[in-house]
Image (tube, rainbow, N blue to C red; front, side, top):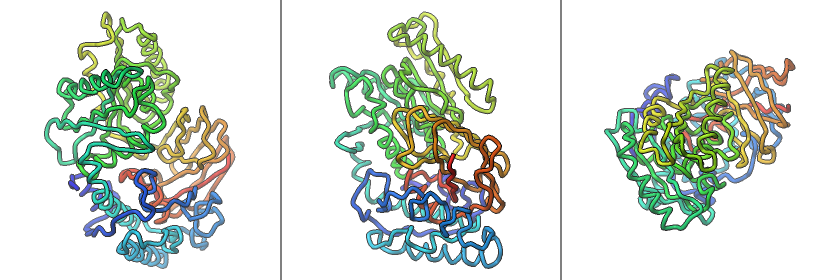
Length: 472
């Protein structure tokens, strides 16, 4: 595992939140349930929808849903709470020292439900990430060396191109999807080779360019249901093995690959810093989820097949309207190049410096989430139980100080995950909808929530510390 400046910064400060001088030791190997692709990297496959080990939707350890894990009415900020928090960290260290296959489920451990101080939460996040990264490094070496990810009978192969020098904060990662689709394997292989070669022409700065080969040869090869978890795993592997900065991950694609950007850009927006679409078609996609990332669209003015040029202009107008209504979001670059056909002769190259200008906001204070045809249960700090998502659902959530305002369409229940970067977790939090109060009170930081949010996504820059479940 290559340690980059962002990782060292994570271990010692966790993005400025105050962890200083903690020396970490990685322990354990292997996954006790033997799986490698279900997102359950710690061997916990119990299907809980909340972090306290049950399925009742409450977010605290005493089962009453008030956010106070020990029932004393505060957030454990007094001396007793500080001592209990430190004891929980010590017990976590002991748990991590146990061989991975012999560890008890963490949700069954009382220490995982104790309210933490902010400083101890920093330590917990660093400990859990180092433990997970060490396991990934030991268990996925052959997968990374073979440059292939296999899940559910499908395989995603890829090639890598290194550009520039690795900066102190780690390289950017650009996942670049080839064209083709709905044709022979040989023709799609040729398109793949073209996409590998485009790395030198597009010339991103200090980046790792990964050109994957689509697992299938279908027209929708870049937005079938299995692509999302494969890309999640690819990103994590590159963070661990290549020292990629997890907040500088981008996606681009040409033609059928551009179709994929229109789809994956919005539905996986919480993974990207920005996305660049070239010569594709949006099909059923919506730009609503793009609120917190940059999005570039480049199409030839004479690219009339499937009305690609007209669809690009429509999306440009749509994004203009969204940005006008929400000036802090929906940054975009849209160019319909007059006189150019489907192949734009690199006129789309400016999309690359445009997207590299952005870093991901892991914890945005406003989130717009429209459920795509491929359902997700997590988007930034919002999450749903597995049986809740339906295509077309929309949730908007905004944090203003200690208040969270929610509007939703056809969503019966939502869980809000919180961290100190979003609000003051040592003060009461209120959740409102249409002026009505859905929740008001403290929300504890717990090891259980941190552990669950890391194991779900394997993203060191997107761990949360507490959660609230509300009915809408």
